[in-house]
Amino acid sequence: MAVPRLAITMGDPAGIGPEIIVKAAARLAPRLAAGELSLVVIGSVPALRAAEALLAAAPMAEVADLAQPFSLGIVEAGPAREPIRPGQMSAEGGRLAYRAIARAVGFAQSGAVAGIVTAPLNKEALNLAGYAYSGHTDMLADLTGARDSVMMLAHGDFRVSHLSTHVALADVPSKLTPARLRRVIDLTAEGLRSLGIAHPRIGVAALNPHAGEGGIFGREDIDVTAPLVASYEGSDITVIGPVPGDTIFVKLRGRSYDAVIAMYHDQGHVPVKLLGFDVDPETGKWKALSGVNITLGLPIIRTSVDHGTAFDIAGKGIANEESLIEAVDVALQLARHRTN
Image (cartoon, rainbow, N blue to C red; front, side, top):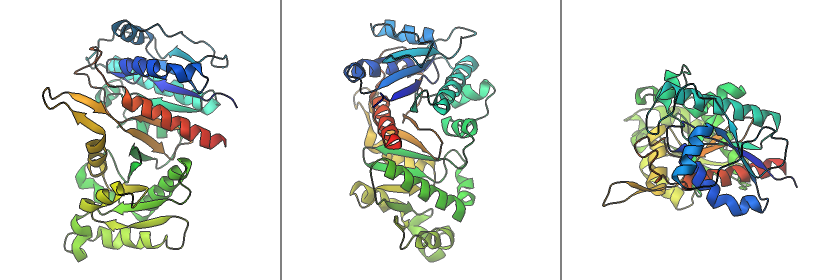
């Protein structure tokens, strides 16, 4: 069996991407040496070299031809037009982040890599560079021609897909349509099967308090969600809902479902990050960042860390690489499922 090769994009080179990549590569070294996987980093070589020097790590080899055998290497996304300084947002950082993604998508579409793992980018920097995207998910959908992709966050077997993400809360009710909800349910089921779950159980969170309380608090759950959920009766997917948002995640943690569909960004992000993130009570600094972002509905495999660029700690050598390693593991699992 060929060794699966994954591309890791650096994200914004002024963020913690370079550091967590260097740290993750060091922890993955035994698996790379054993031929379990191969990694190609796509990003700013100078930013990676600075992180290697900061962490006293051996320099990663530059790669010119992905057809050649190698376990770990880097491909330049730039070159940079101006210096990148850790912790400083810039249009140049956004441009390099975009170029890394565009190159990675090309590699994935050609079959040169089995999937993409993304380090964090900064949405403001991306837009300053002239790329009007709300984040990785929209960009990847555009670059691959995908429609209606879905964000799933996962902390172990605690998985949450999102009906909507980067939209104003006032606009969320209009996003809840039968077509969109069916698309999210179907892609979530497909993603769960790719993770080895043959008969997915999916809970659908209510949009309104108490699932509308008979229409007192809104009718979306009654008029849209309930009939759509009922249409899955007798199918090979178990769909339950609408379930009030204040209890559905307790049930997910108790393994009543394999995944939950949240209606909006914070409804889904808060419980995942509550479980996966931790803060040192004395310093107030992050000490654990665990969780994976999986994009469903793309023609290519894409996973990501579940945190941002953390400009405030970039260049200090203290960034936590755990989420990146988890994202690599999930991408590897998805790649193996796709080739079987």
